[in-house]
Image (cartoon, rainbow, N blue to C red):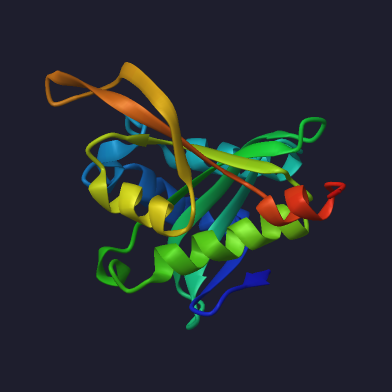
Length: 179
């Protein structure tokens, strides 16, 4: 368990599969995610079990301080040899949005990724018209790296994907010989 100021990141358990299945089938919330087809409870079970054994992917349930699940945070494509990884976050509980939970959970994850996992770089992909996510990532220090054109399709049209990243600057300057 990793505690932030407003949230707790904990490992996804098999008991969470039912709520994960409901979340993965919430088409409105998943508007900007690469989830097209309905997900079964069995798929959610497999997802939790596979992630538990996968050293290159970690799935966390985001709980509020009342220990109620409100979202999911995924650290994916962990490249231990290159010290980088991808991160993704969704606050699924619509009643808990715009309360700072996403920012707190992501900030907590960033600190964990840099300080405990010893990663050098975190990156993410975001659909260009997901303004709330772009604002969140920018507010935490993510920088735009580039654009992947026409990579996301919804509602009859293609959208670009913005690639963003954050480097562990503290590490960069602490390890540099300054002359």
